[in-house]
Amino acid sequence: MSVHSDMQLHYDDSFNPAAPIVQIGVGATDAPSVVEVRAILDTGSELTFVPESVVQRLGLQRIGMTGIQALGEPVRLVPYYPARIWLGGRFAWFDEVVATSEPYAILGRGVLNRSRLTLDGPGGIVTIE
Figure 1 (cartoon, rainbow, N blue to C red):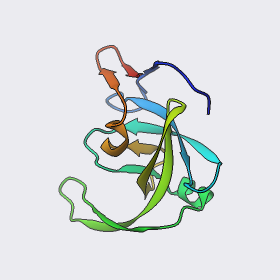
Figure 2: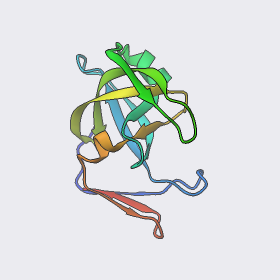
Figure 3: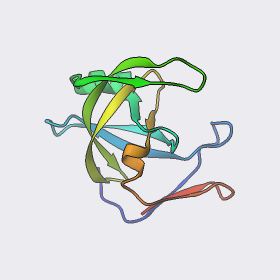
Figure 4: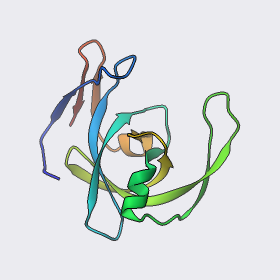
């Protein structure tokens, strides 16, 4: 992935309401390959979720179980995996991710709190510094 300075991206209107979407890279902690995937920014999520297909393609190995809970739902135990995350072509971090059946990733606070993000809802722009 290439290195960028500040990035400005438009919200994705295919979500209702429009949502801040970024391109991220996901990689195994012990291999150089990276899979790029679209990710919705979710400041309400503690965890980062990546599509099941990405977990399988990278051969990520489960390192434990964690409880997740959607609003109004009971807690479910799900496996989590070690991964490297790139945001804006930089900021390689190690993080624990959970697989999702969604076709996009969900970037939670574990990653978001390591970046300076500006969400301009009325302007439909997300800026990553």
